[in-house]
Image (cartoon, rainbow, N blue to C red):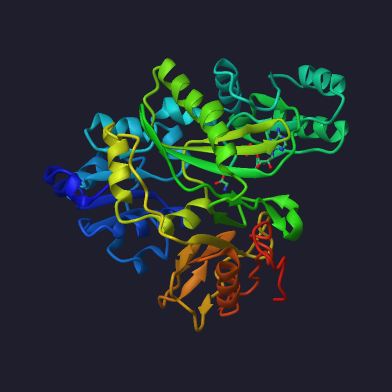
Length: 443
Ligand code: AMP
Ligand code: GLY
């Protein structure tokens, strides 16, 4: 796709872009969007302390829940395209509201976001469309759950039905633990999100993330990625939001990708259409490659974090056009993303204690960095009274690099990480171990 192939009307319309969200994901989206010379300004609501280090970016304070003020501000700023990053505003119907007010929005409506905000609905959706996924039971009482847990030959995975900030999945090793997890959910640990519980057969295999940009009917795929969900090296320790990623995922050979398209992606889009859901946004397929083939672990209605920070630097300057086409329902499906000749990797630097309790407010010092094809996207930072950069989240910085091969990518990421310091900094040293020749390095 070249700039020349887009109409002058489109060009005029893409001056001011607004991104909703405050994480590394949104900063990386802003970074990729501003690459296009037609884009004059990228506003982030609320963004974080790293947002304004990105060219053309400005943070603005608007409470997205104050609808009248929001619309006034969007009109005042002459916003041409809105990209909604996180799942909560999508689940609350923000995209529907903004579309009703005639804004172009990248992000599904409440109906499409249900793929993420109700796990039981998503499982039934997959069942309806015959999409491969783990066997499941939807339960609404502890008694019913106990019966199913006891009759299963192996411990089941226990999931909160609704949104739970990545904390609603339990993978117990015994039936007693399954019951304990179910009890805690029904006792109200997750509020209304836990009114329903999904029990699932535990499946095995490597996990991969696949992203489809959809315009309601057609789609195009972004480069694949692999996340590292566990806190510690060798994939041990508690689940986190993601400790690092790389893209593309060589595990997804053409054979698997073909199967994923035929068995999962196309049936998903067809089923959305059947259910009259016009999905204009990204569908994130969290997949497991099992012995019997690829299966869906979960759908998300947003970009993955840190997969997004990893993939965005591979995008060419036309990326913003793809988002716009999705928002307008006019993808051709044949668009090519020029992901230039490099691979990308990302390591997340976290606060000590994450994903549990952690302290914030520590100064971040960044020394002598090799900055070619290298990005630091702030995930959770704030500015102190004197403008100094401070830690302000569990995941603090996304450290990203592109090189010819993964060894070179992670060599640079880890070399640069030695120049980055804050009290309690923690990161995994083995991100990309699946694709690196040198398994892990001395710090
Ligand atoms: P989710 O939030 O549904 O992606 O689940 C978080 C993580 O739990 C996934 O990335 C998997 O590692 C694991 N998981 C979820 N469902 C299953 C399952 N049915 N079998 C095995 N592992 C699972
Ligand atoms: N990388 C996992 C997620 O965004 O949910």
